[in-house]
Length: 239
Length: 239
Image (cartoon, rainbow over all chains, first blue to last red; front, side):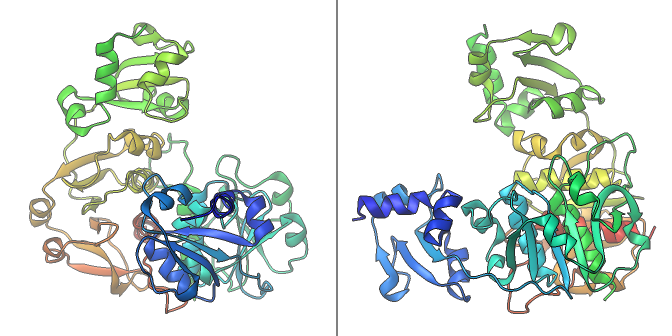
């Protein structure tokens, strides 16, 4: 049976400040846990109702205990605690994706998966962007989180110290289908409701836009994750 | 105050069979309701805690009543009931998107939004695809649902009777960056877990794929909505 302190620790990891304090985060779901076990990520403890073969770090628990520690309405069969990995130095000579206050965990998870697909090594996030070790982000990233270096920075300072082109996704900008993209630079994607902030906008060297083909009366923009998908595809297709 | 029968009717609209029986569906959230009010969609009743100016179809209710009829954990200020619109004839001379059992409401909502952006008039769904009038789909579509003709069909019969090219998104197929796409045809996107079904696969004339640029050890595919975003962008960029 789990001790009160164990339960308290695990449940506290739903909050960013406790994740940072303990250097730990939670993963649920067999598929994602397996991907993380097969990566450079270090397992702290695996709580499971079925033997999983993670040696001395595995703790068999009851379904009742699983419900006490799971963040899901319908828990899977295991909850794993992993160590938050050390971040690597950012390679300024590659294409980098930078997020200016993306708040939705599903969007960040999808963008991490896209970075993995399109070979983006470094994903730079503003301090206000949702934490990548938020359980919903880890879930949505489907294991891609282990293959992308995600760094939280003061975005203004980071961009001020970057020497190659800084691209920003806007509703009005240069048509991406008519542009040739370099192999390096930063692609900045903005907040779901407000787009790229005014302070960051001053540092953008190239405003780019995905043309709309539908009804011009429609006012909605593309979702930030689908816009990132199309833009990364445009950057890579010319290689 | 709302009658028991009104509450019962509204709450029943969470299920497809009652939506079809009554020809009605539910919309929540000021922004989406406003988009639907400004479209050809016909309002049945608007239940709201604040005057909304929808004339005799508006019913002012208490916050307590709103909580009784809302499908959201944190209700907005209004729940609107709209009539399910009549579907239009499919234009086989345009580019059509077809979904083979897409199950996630968020994915369907995002794909509807993409169809709107890229000027796809007709979205054809297999019978097993999640219902587009599911409250979560309507929410995720952000009003785009009013500008796309969404038709549920027997997908095999539909494709058998289609005479231009039928494209299917696969993990292994022709590189989309090297292909020139026509202005007409059907783009088939598969189920989240299983992709395109075997029966539908036999009717695909062109298997296409979005190249991966990242770590080749990674096994995950792209999410169906982000793959649709990239493929629609590829179809449209050559216009």
